Length: 355
Length: 280
Image (cartoon, each protein chain N blue to C red):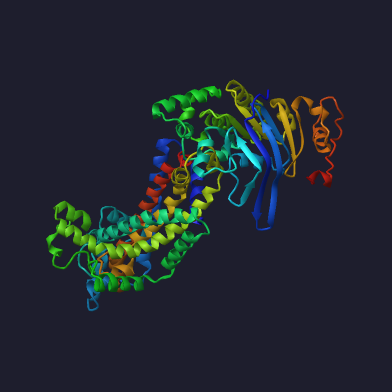
């Protein structure tokens, strides 16, 4: 809630700085650049502060002092800090995050491989969460205090309180092992894995590009369970917020106006009230989407899903700093873009914010 | 002016269930309405607005309405299904709300909100509806109707917003308009303007008007007849032209509270209430 109201106020306050259409684009670009700069500064400082010696990691424990010094100079670590920072920024901007010690690939290559897996999972999960969560919230609000409301609330509460690893394991046990309705861990059956050319890295899209429906349905059957389990959490959150936003809007005067006009209850709820509910809800959905895009480590581990969360966690456990920092920059950049997207959507949905 | 009876209300009661117990908002209000302009006057909480809402069946969910008779033409307003209500609301009885800042949907264009009111009751295409809406905006004396049509409510002033409200509620051509404090939220300077526009349209189209207000003066200058309400009861009913002949002490008290141009400017009398006024 507080994030929503804060956002609202910010939007108004900033309006004075740059105004007009070009001004508003400028403002978005400017605030993006500032935020990204801050993100780089933080990751850079973390990299310098951590008690892991990148030189030692490269040369090994048994290198001589002269080798150590030479490598240190090659890595630019003897330069003043501000110069190092500029080198770091220009490296990041050209897509150079260094090489991962763990996989010995450039970090960017690794991320290009793992991020689409997370993106695909998070997007499907959010779609399910939105498609089921909004109607559930609306349904609960218009039946406030009656049994549909209680059902939605209990389901929501369960979604909040059940640990995801348990839910994931139970899901696999029931739907994969016992019922055999869905495929097991991984993004495709092991048999199929080498068949597919990673054009976009999104399995559902790639299989469609190849036009192989068997592969496509195999990918669907693999993603549906982990996506549903992640979706359950965002559904619970979205439904709860929709319910409270909806109750707030239904008590507004313009709803009474619509009733006076003789408009159907259906249209009042889905057009008038929901039109206003969507304004704060966009921020809620964007936040939950951004959270999923960071990668959900537990889900990715249980379902052997080669995503960003798994990659960053593995790198962290192996003190692979280039990979961790690269991953952090990517997560931060994703967060910033999702926020910007929700800002634009917000402006699209609320004419009062278009100034 | 009373040639035919449009609306008959007998023993209207509106009760609300609140956490603090039952609240009797309207206690046995009765009146007949022809094609005339009826004013309902009273202070906050006198039940005047709830009387208006009850006629449209729009009492809040925690309230209940009962009346021994509530008839609009041949329609029995006391027993309508939601579907039947939708045929009455907007098309036959409409209501102008108090504050355009809250009573217009902030995320829909003004044009779409007016068109929606019209198309709910008239089967026409979008182009025709748009044409009618622009005409209606002209009728409420909006100078730049095309621009206002495409504007959002926050982009127009309060006086303009209330004209939009009038346009929206009059466009389906209802027979009865309930105006619930239509000018209270407006600047004093535009109050009379807006009221005059509403009055003109109501006369031109031969509509009946129920004008709900706390402003006895305003009501008496725009209405034929006035009901004075106090704590859910009608304490006096009189012709607007005979306001000075009011008999009930509450009405007299209200009239006394109005400052007079050539009167004593030092202090205004305070209304002294008597418990007996609230006893039916």
